[in-house]
Amino acid sequence: MRGDHHNDENLAFERLVRPHFDRLYRLAWRLAGRKAEAEDLFQELLIKAYGKLDELVKIDEPASWLSRVMYNLFVDERRRFARRRLQTVEEGQMPGDGLAGLPGVEDPLLDRERWEKICALDAALSQLSDEHRIVVLLHDTEGYKLEEIHEIMGVPVGTIKSRLHRARARLREILTRNGTFS
Amino acid sequence: MQTEDTDKQDQEIQALLKDYPMPQATATFYDRALARATHEGTRRQRKRWVMAGFASAVAAGLAFWLIGGFFLATPILPDADPGIPGITMTLEEPRTVNLMFASATALDAAMLTVTLPDGIELAGFPGQREITWQTSLSKGKNLLPLELIAVSPGGGEVLARLEHKDRDRTFRLRIDVS
Image (cartoon, rainbow over all chains, first blue to last red; front, side, top):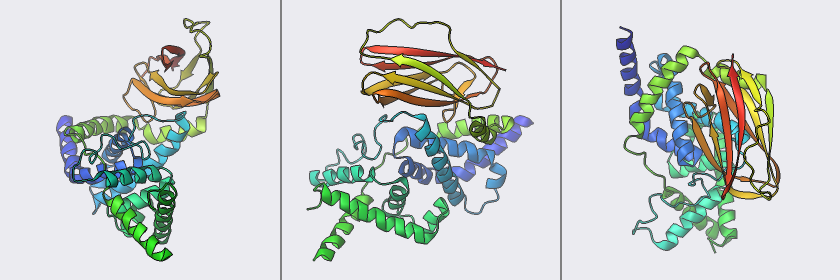
């Protein structure tokens, strides 16, 4: 009987979360910026969400709830991560670590000049604070609305607008200074 | 003119951001993550240590200093064992152990591997027995805090192995679980 109960719970959980996996995986990547950390974050979210299944079944928009929980996990983990590691240069694929292996490198539709600009953008993103990098990636890359970012990050829309403006200005400044934009 | 240039650059940045790539999840990742979540979630629910762990880790704040010399300028010696330092942990109560590596020179691309005995986990890496980082060391003292959690009785030895090129050094910490 207990086994049946757990199977029912597992099925209910899967029905609630699986439709949002792609969106959440992308969010994890945009937050963490590298594969290992993004997948850990995704995994931790599912474990936490499973523990709150009773709460999750009553939520009208699980995607928003899950996104917010993931962001909070990221912030918590980032604080601990900063304390734990000496200096991390592992795994690659952190913004600024280069984009080797990601889609686009061999894409014949992307001309060389454009790809070099994307690499320069990648390096420039690594110079932004987490708050600015996340806002600009969620808004300009992933297409989240300001209100959705507000729901995830829990900061006022006005603050998000301000961060977005500053992040774009900072990217422009970096890309101009390094010669990407003449 | 300045404004026109700025507007054009902003548009180009936004166009580049739209193309900023990321990989897809591998075919089996979602299934594995789901299976682990239901398994691990059940276990955590039962033991209810997650939130308590975070809070008590901060509260406990016990730092154990394991100081080891990592002088690459000198020949590598077999691991001396003048008595392995040890600590006693309480089941499911996180505890922070600070490892200190002193290096004679700055090192790039050193590999640090932490190997855990059964029943001891590193916070943030549930279920993993071996965790490896590639890291850089500054000249002088480098601190690595490890937040450990005993999830079952028994204990054992935590090994922290630092490798650089053909040289290495292993630090041991004995853990008893009460």
